[in-house]
Length: 446
Image 1 (cartoon, rainbow, N blue to C red):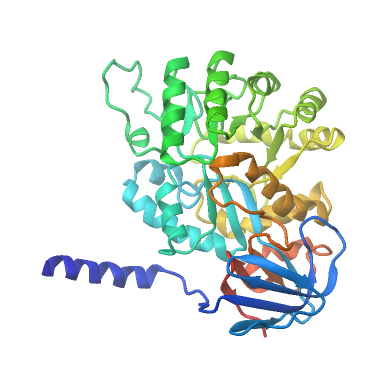
Image 2 (image 1 turned 90 degrees about the vertical axis):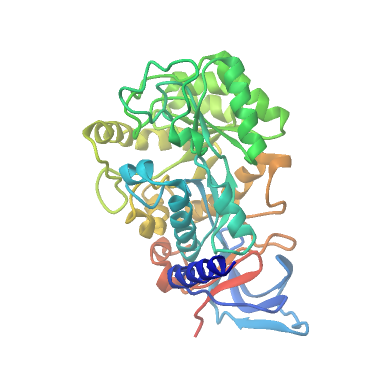
């Protein structure tokens, strides 16, 4: 027992060193006064407003509100109050280290590293993420229980991939597989699951939902970081795709699909999937089909050069990445033309430096969208997408908006991001207050 106590004391000492310092709040209500409010939906700011937060929800918005007893009062002094940012395509377990280190590391280590990285994510103003692949359940639980700081996580758990699909990260000599072979390490710890044939995809999808997935992530086409699936490949047959979607529907949630080509998008729409991730080869025909079926496009503003360019450890991935990114302008033009529901995500992967540029990805949207359109995507629109998880929603309540009754995730910005979107690229300087679930985690208002 003495040894256990010493070990626990040592662990707590290490955690105290590694954990960032956050503002503390012990009261039950917060009143923000004299704020110019961007509510996530309307381009025009509501000037000189007061917002009362009681518990974890916004209880009242008015020109003037009397502060209840034991309330923290924050004078915004005309700063812009806006919803917390939402990243609709995030990987809690994969964003903070190179792919070789991630695939070669112990899962316990990765959970500790992911917990620390999640605290950094929150301090960049991203109060919610939709995690679209990886076993983030432990990190999510630790955040929800207050053991560590981080954003709300909508977890997909292990993504479902076919053999030679985007989730098949086995070694070059690991096939053909023998009946009875044990699962490789990435599958054993629930980062990915390989399933072939209708019975197997049904089983694996049910297993991921049993683990607590709020939505299912399936691999529907060739990817960049995987080495054995060219970009032109349509992954899964229609029967397999429909089986995955049908299981998700039976749990009252939906399927998000890693996908790029027109043929793959058409097949997965027919199967019933509701969110197309990446979709770099979307054209007018597929955009029109997506709009008709109410299917979301989860886009990522990637680039081959500049601060948001992804870097890879092998030339195969680099070539694939360049081939996709050069099609982005056309995809955006088509989705805007047909008014496809569009979500913003970053897909920051395997690069510890890119996470620091989280807001830079959002700011880069101004190449194609107005600041209002970009901010609406990263707040209200992403919040709407999250709610497709229906009964599997881990955080019932409205997200991505500032309105009475909504969950209290908010940022106070020193400046007007509707006029200068670049403000979001420097959250340390410009986000003077960050609130998540009614709790202040940063407050440097002067």
